[in-house]
Length: 168
Image (cartoon, rainbow, N blue to C red; front, side, top):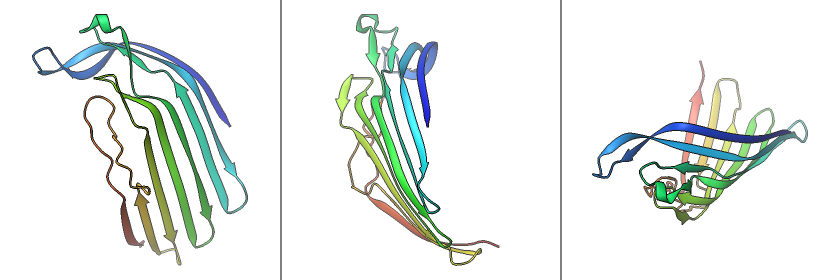
């Protein structure tokens, strides 16, 4: 088990932002955050392993260009992650997921839907030299916004990679 209680207060955190004339410039702003992080790695037996964790936090920033807005929300307030892995002599299979909730696009203070990243890795290694593997991402084919500032970049749709490795 790992448990962390944290608090940060950063003065003059540097970010690239547009000035009032829409010209990108390096700006200083203050940031603060506090929260709790808990994680655990569990070895169930010789073959099975799992990992779980969560973060509850309250990240905020203060933009000196707009003092009337005061402290504004940043990033997501809730993060959950977990996965399970199976290993034996020839096989490895791992399923992982990471969730970020209570998210906001910080430039607009607009709530956005939670982000859920999922991945699957399967590998077969019949000898020390050869490996055949399959990796898949975005298993649920979600159209989540992956950015957190102002852009609306979407996650790649479901995608996969099938490969062969030879080590010499």
